[in-house]
Image (tube, rainbow, N blue to C red; front, side, top):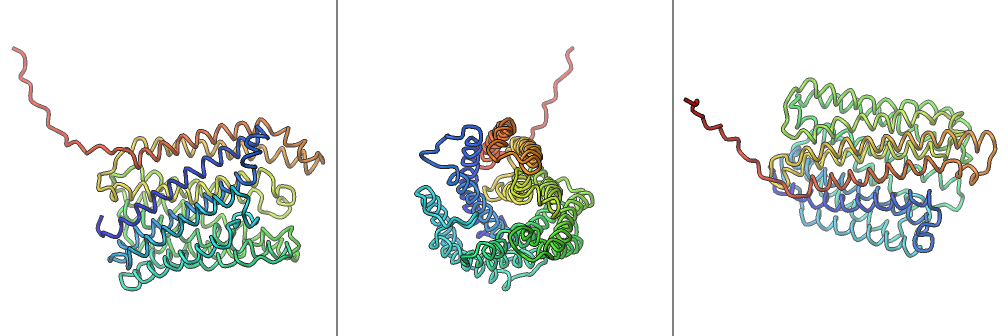
Length: 449
């Protein structure tokens, strides 16, 4: 490590991975309910299992982003984080809020709005933590060297905090509620989070390929422009069927189609920089995750998003397992893999070791991505069958669910494989790391007489 305060990132990554484990556990439990409907129904109903699964996902991704910022900003700004004490206080607030939210959900106390179910005191805690974070990192950047990476990262992080404020607005009219609810959910994952993703990828590419910073920065600004241009008005694809004016069908269809562009640009960016750099970086596992991230994000967020983003297709597919297929692969490819890339790169430095357990880490990459791809295909086929039986032929919802049982078993099986690959990743990152053994020259052996 070049700067002592980069050590802050270690504890953010540890807490993020703990919540990652919680997310996967409750996802597996929720998947089990699809095939054994009364499983845990008296103890933890399905809506609570799903709530914890999705909320743990959001919180651990945010912790990963914060940890990545605390790691890369000192290197980019060429100075230590302004206040390590505030950074640790922020982590405590976030973890108390996360545990408090999970406890509240288990007791049936929640706000009822998907992804924004947190009790009011937890939302206030998130805002306080965000203010602490923005003060800390913004001051660090303003008093140090400014780069395109930190500029874009700060833009994404400030946007993340600002758009979360819409979570406090909860109108009684459900159409108005959904209109503003998407200001948080969509403008996070298909707007400002893409800026965070692009900046972290740019940092990793610079560090692992050695490509000239100016070349990377030109790509970065182009990707940011595409993401903001398509992502902001692309919100319209959520307004098709909530009572909004009809012109949103055109706006949503056109600009949502363009949302494929920034993901494709990220693929071109990562691989062209890898080709130009030609540096044999010792951390091959981190490089594998870094190259895999834009590829899986392109398919999950781009291709699978495009499959049902046009209004005349969405009319039939909205709210089916097609949506679940897109959601799983998009979150995994764009943001889960991004955090795992950063952790794979930073953890050897944070533990003061040379890159270690790389074979295990790369095995976890291939198993996890293969299992998620299988899950996505399974849910896609389930969604197509569901659309035909339920929304074309007119069968009832529960009749159709019985016809999808095989797909749900396959989804559960792939989920278990994902869980095993997550354990493999955690062991590779946090398990014992053997010291590098220097190669010894072979003793010369005299030829036999």
